[in-house]
Length: 283
Ligand code: FAD
Image 1 (tube, helix red, strand yellow):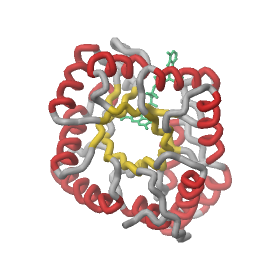
Image 2 (cartoon, protein in one colour; image 1 turned 45 degrees about the horizontal axis):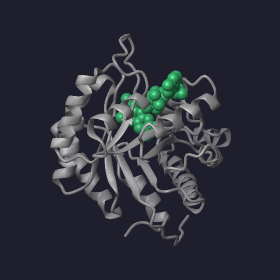
Image 3 (cartoon, rainbow, N blue to C red; image 1 turned 180 degrees about the horizontal axis):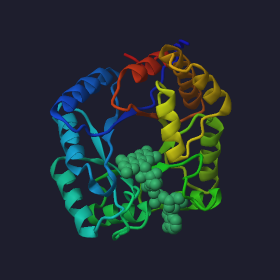
Image 4 (cartoon, rainbow, N blue to C red; image 1 turned 180 degrees about the vertical axis):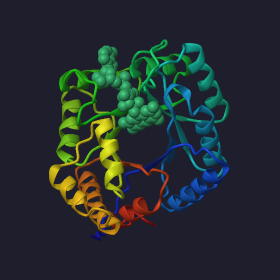
């Protein structure tokens, strides 16, 4: 599918920190390939309980040293106020201006939730300690957070988190555009109209996608799961269908007024670049 549609909505790319020097070099190449799309920022995930703190910081540093804008994720579960404050101080000292603020999930076997229970408390804390220094993104779940009691309560918690001082949100990935549109509409009806950027998951491997989706509560529509599954080990066909489906989803999202696109790149550039090329975004 090729379109000529142009958009001025910003795009951003998410990475996870690498564990080795070789991994870091490869990621720098991926980052440079994606830079032709002139992203607003590259974000870097943060392992639960601070397990990747050093890797996140190193990856952020490498992105910023290369002249790009970077946003570390920061999860608060299992942390103390003092611990989070010291990380915020490091981010500020390094010139970081944007944070993705999350609760995170306690690693299995850990019981101590620490001094923050939910992400809204982290947002409040960042604002009270650093005023307006950071642009704060938070997570949104158009298909409902997997631990939520029910959809309405989840929506109320999300709106409270935005009102605690977040500037914008990035969604969990989804394949059903109605989930996103209804979610945005419900927020607007409740008086919350800050930007909610769709998180986009390129498809290049069915079993990995199915595993992730189970964990994070993202629904793969039956028809899509069946077709991807039906290709078995035929990776080329999986990628071709995935490319078509995700390009179309992005095109429809932008046409419906989505304020941008945030790509879960899984530290790869090829599929994301192809999607953006289909959207006419590649310069
Ligand atoms: P919250 O907003 O705190 O919500 C978690 C649950 O608690 C929801 O069910 C909500 O309804 C409920 N809740 C919220 N507030 C209240 C309240 N006041 N009282 C009662 N219940 C409440 N995880 C990582 O470990 N590292 C990452 O880098 C990372 N990056 C992510 C990026 C994006 C864009 C997204 C969508 C997710 C990311 N995650 C990451 C996963 C995230 O940490 C998990 O989904 C986690 O379970 C919830 O985090 P949250 O910030 O959305 O939590």
